[in-house]
Image 1 (cartoon, rainbow, N blue to C red):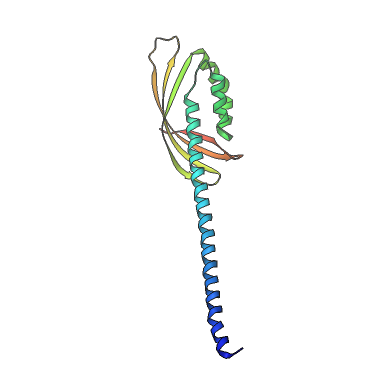
Image 2: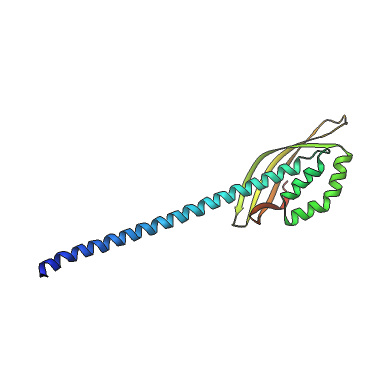
Amino acid sequence: MSVVAGLAARPARILIAALSGVLVALVGTGVWLAAQARDERARADDKQAALQAASTHAINLISLDHRTVDDDMKRILDTSTGLARAEYEADAGKLRSTTIANQVVQHGVLRATGLVSLTEAAAKVLVVADVEIRWDGSDNPPQERYYRWSMDVTRTGGAWLVSKVVQVT
């Protein structure tokens, strides 16, 4: 091999090495961007799931009917966990008997939800809802009530459930 041929091959090797380095950097950047996008999508999904869990729970709390009270209470328990669930279970008998005895019919409307904080396993959500309460067989006019809650929502077994409810005044 001549000296001239050896010198000509050297820039080609340098060019190949440089292009390989650029390719590795581009692939690495692509992988990093894909991971960032996946993490951002997961966070957006968690946000939506936490808001939906609080919304569903709020509607369950304010939608009671003396004719379906057992199913209504089951929905409340199904969307709660921890301290919230324990409190609902402890009050279930009284709620059931009062709802039936007074022939209560509550119809609620969710007005707004807002995310206060979010981690991988927990969220705090503010919820605004209104309810109209009437009593079957009563001449009393329906009453409107307005509820504002701060709800702690916890990821439990892959699902988001309400673990604490505090009424905000």
